[in-house]
Length: 412
Image 1 (spheres, rainbow, N blue to C red):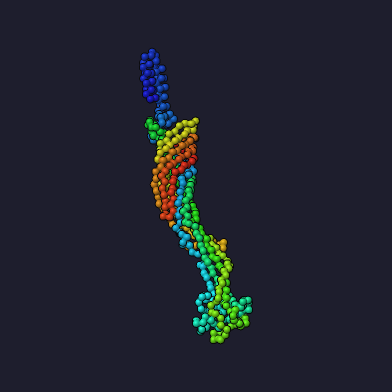
Image 2 (cartoon, rainbow, N blue to C red; image 1 turned 30 degrees about the horizontal axis):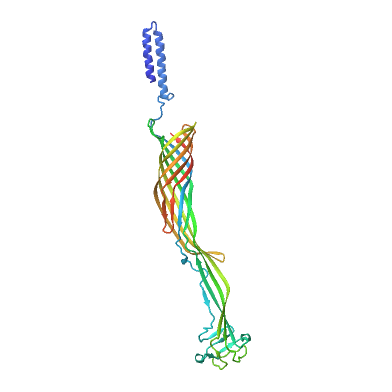
């Protein structure tokens, strides 16, 4: 435009020079002046000092925005169940037992060995029920009525256990962490009439690990130990007994007494109790990795000088990678000392899921210079939930949450 203008000026000068009297010198001066202007303008255009086109670039423009955000990813609803059962738990205290003295049954003929004497069988015992093959040690064994008392000692251990019902664990956990993001703001060429200023393409990566523990059942084991004091009384009041220390022989003869005691008394005395506490501890570990792509139009407006706001919304496309690990170990405590029961249980389940959601974002920006802006934003997202299970336990993952972040934008 400027070169055309100069040419018109030259043409006007030629016309003015030809019509003016004595104007040849004036015409020459004007011509030289205009030629100088044309040369200067031509050199300036080449050097860029006076660009020939100052209009806005007409192509697509991209702004890159790296940022870091705190992301509250969502909730994990845990339904935990154990593989170990209380029926699989052995006794930590030993089994119940009973040790009886060698005194036979009180209702059957037999040889009887006491701590302070003996009453054995002889040949006629089966017919008469009596024997001369007996003996005793102390005068105190003879009662005031003349009966003879024999004593013996035994032992008994009684084992008992009680367990709670299997416990199905239910709880909720929240996943959160620091998320790196990379946003691209794509602006259409100037002159395109669109209801928005640019298109947001946002990539975000989130990773977190959650550990949850519970006890699937508890129980206690007890072992009660008793001393058994046996007291057999033989009816000898109608006999004249030999003195203490008497010991009859199998061959006899001698004073005969009944082989069967007239009565038997057993006294149980608790001598001690052992206890053990038992529980099955379950650990659930869930690891989630999420790569998210959000795409949506962006509108913006001016708040004040160098301050603008932006609002974006659109769909999100989420790729999830997960791993669910479960470990169990039955534990027992005996006399204050912890001990492992069995080898435990280990299981792991991994996989991936794909889900679609929607997002809404609001941003505030501060212009630093022509190319750089600082920004802060908050973003909310609603996404599809999915379930992870290993057969025993399951975790329902709801990835809906929000993010708050800071970043910078570079435009070119």
